[in-house]
Image 1: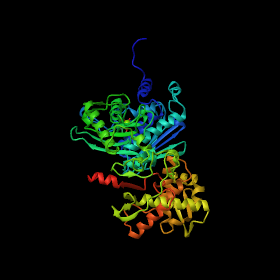
Image 2: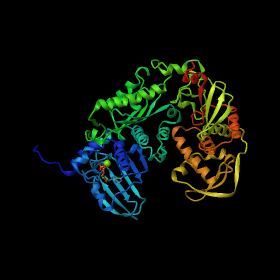
Image 3: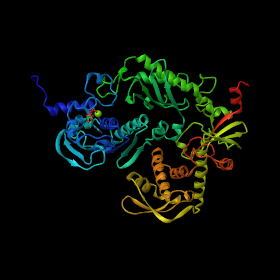
Image 4: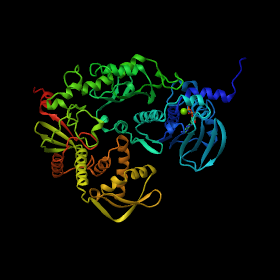
Length: 576
Ligand code: ADP
Ligand code: MG
């Protein structure tokens, strides 16, 4: 065959192969575009593993109507325009390949509107060719719908795994972005059901909670290191040594918040755990390395998954030292050599519990385990249940913690977590006893729900009723609220329902337990951090906490109290 230039549609299909390997790669490119567009909310909807449909909706800066068609041309980008910019890339995208590649192998529909414009624009493409375009009203931001992926590339379709495998790749991907962009609210909807939501409130710890669930998240240690020697920064979370996994897939790395795969970085972390984990056990980690843009080449791999560092050993040692640093700070004094796992099993009450990063001891935690359920019931026979110690109030700290004296030292009690536990147990007991606990409203209140709140309400309808909410449909997305749980009787009834729905949705992602609703109700009703408490209030709260069957953790599994033992204090002050 003579040499000839391929026709453009065939060339486009071949090029698409590099960028669009599978549904998760489409989601990755679209989500990265939404992040680059400065979005604060990104929703990903997929059907049938993403093959039937992927839709990514954002509230970012949108695309001007007259540039939408250009965006679907190869090498069309708004993100760089000079060689210098290529050397220090701050955006996730820069090659201008994703949209044309995705459109070449699917039916793609984009609607987009710049926030200051009144109207939007819609463009439909089939296998890369424009089908139609028109002005269209839409919310500010961009929505891209990709259907029938690889419909024109049957060979590629055959290589896809089952829908559930493709779905889980997408779930993993979205949760990784949620970890490293805690300021963005991510939502993933799988076949019409919300499968994941991150809070998007900017707090890394809460993003972590949304991804890993309360118990694992509680056992993770925060890293925030500004290495003066190397000039690099490391931030993120790693698991305390007592928590480990059987493979490396729970370690995620980001360079300037770009998700990368790197053997070197996982070695750096594994090395930091040397002597702390058993063989063939690996930590959970989500680590972002912040380095000057010009010290990393992101234009190295076709799918931008791998990057090249100008000074690899500097990156290695920064990460290794940062991780080791938090592990040393967390581990029991003085021996680092013995795995902390063994320490949890030992019989002495104070060394039994995992240590917090502050040298205090979390009470009642034992090793977190999903199977234990939301109540934090310590039903595992290896973890004896401990009653709450009798506590004497000393004062309040940072309007958040109650400082108390106990039989063996000082206790800091988290007022919100403690009150949540008290309310949760009260709600559960009442439910079992079937006592009326509903407070009818004098006037019914109409409450408008978002689709996801509506879904949560429908799937938890019976539970919400049992706990004291009474409502009925009143239009498509509106409900008439007639009664609220008695513990909310002095609050704003609409807000109480909305908060509980949001929390129930959030918790439901973690596990499908029936007591999710009770925990959400308890959390909503509980005293917030930041509230000044009188001495009588503190005394009453501690007494109530003492009388609950599971005083040591809140219904989400967070500790209610941290113990600073007399021995620990004496050691700290050099008295021993
Ligand atoms: P790249 O991201 O490498 O620039 P893409 O093909 O992914 O290339 O996107 C092309 C261009 O389309 C981007 O440079 C950007 O200007 C625009 N664009 C794509 N997606 C969005 C979005 N969700 N919001 C705003 N602009 C977008
Ligand atoms: Mg892009």
